[in-house]
Image (cartoon, rainbow, N blue to C red; front, side, top):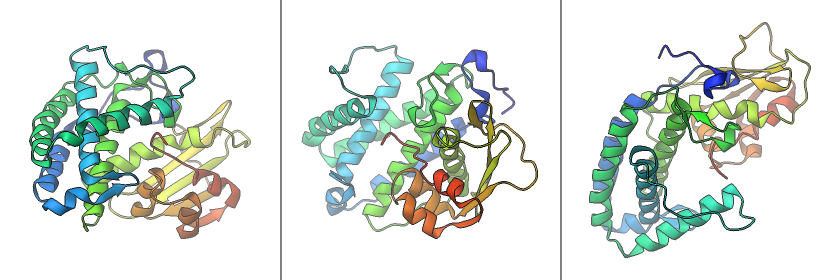
Length: 286
């Protein structure tokens, strides 16, 4: 992807280089459908996340698909509104639960067929988007509006994460495909500047996060005037280097494990307080 970030167009440079998740929506949709078509009847009742069964989580995914198509493809503006004093997190959790409750009258077979139809439309929609166009904000990265490349990458991570939760609930391991996981990790790590926003450090201080394995890499957050940034080149020895495996990283970012658990699993070189601050990262609405 050759697009250059442009803050005037709503693409903050401190997010780092753009991510192009658009080609991955169709293969992710195919992987989701293979997972759903392979479920046994009892699997649909297994707990996928606290309070939701696999069936509930699939219904939630369907709601996300309909929301994206209605809002961004069809220009549909009707729907639930904020109640007085409701925060973004409270609003999202409320409308998600309302949708899941309404879908409990829908059979697993009907849900599967509908997800197949609608998720294919979502994949085709994302393939046509302008990556530099302004889009929905990403609260966990502190950017609003976000460029479409980041908004779409965020949606890709959500779809992928929910598929893993379904897999885990039914006795399967995380899908190790590095083509998917590398984009998930790259997107999740864009939350680092927002995570460190209250961490004071001299300008030029650098924190490196290294993730091992074929889907991993190294991300460098640099303290600049007024904020941390992922856009600055790595220079010399960082003040802190945090090394984690890929599985622990994506689970940390989605609160599948706690920051304390992740920190205990990590290798830390240099400033332990700075590394510990990085382990507070959250890359979902939580």
